[in-house]
Image 1 (tube, helix red, strand yellow):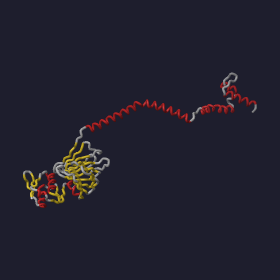
Image 2 (cartoon, rainbow, N blue to C red; image 1 turned 120 degrees about the horizontal axis):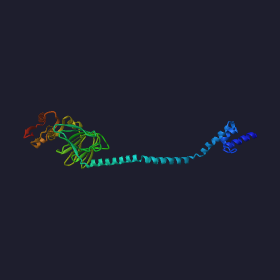
Image 3 (spheres, helix red, strand yellow; image 1 turned 30 degrees about the horizontal axis):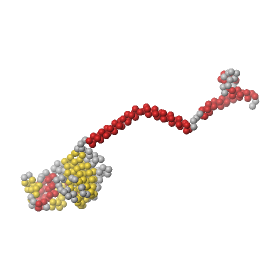
Length: 327
């Protein structure tokens, strides 16, 4: 490098370090130096300008330190947001608490109110079909009563029967259906069955059409299978299971009744409910007569009694508002 070039670069170094030349600032001396248009000046100026970027890069924090600073900023912002949104949060919390209070109040009111019961009584000579709130279908025979609580719903499924009823119960393994019959009960596992339990009679019977039921009395718990009938003698609590033709036990839904070697006591019990008439036996011998056949509620009482007289050699005589049975 010759002396002229060396002097030029010394002058450049002095200018870019803001050093004074004869008491003048660099910016005032550029034009005087004649370097402003020089190619070397432009190259050195680019390098000099880059020093600020290098300095800024040197101030960049390490990743860990940078994260700590960012986290602190976020935390402060969250705190401000919490303060800002606190009135809204308080309102929501208050609403939830109030809802809880109202919910508990409703529950307390629900259980503190006296439980009431609804009774469906079918008049003599009629058959009624109804659907409970859980979807279970019930057919009630003439003179039968179905009773259930006002709290009956899909989670509380219990009814009481005084009479004869055919059930098609909606299956729900979590909430079983219970039928109270006298001092016993039938626990249902999604089933079609017929129950006959008149309080005025001495026995209760359940005939299972399909599904599964559990019969519970004070002495035993018994499961029965489809096609079986369980009969309880009310006075003793004795239980008997036998196989039957289930179809014959639900004929009454269509207004018919089938009897197979059953006594006239059983038969006239049905007639009393169908025709609202009272029968009286002249002697015990007449009570022992057996009857097999089918009677139809659509027929008149006189027609039905004539059929029975032809079959069992008994007579029916009207006496003082009653129907006397003699042999």
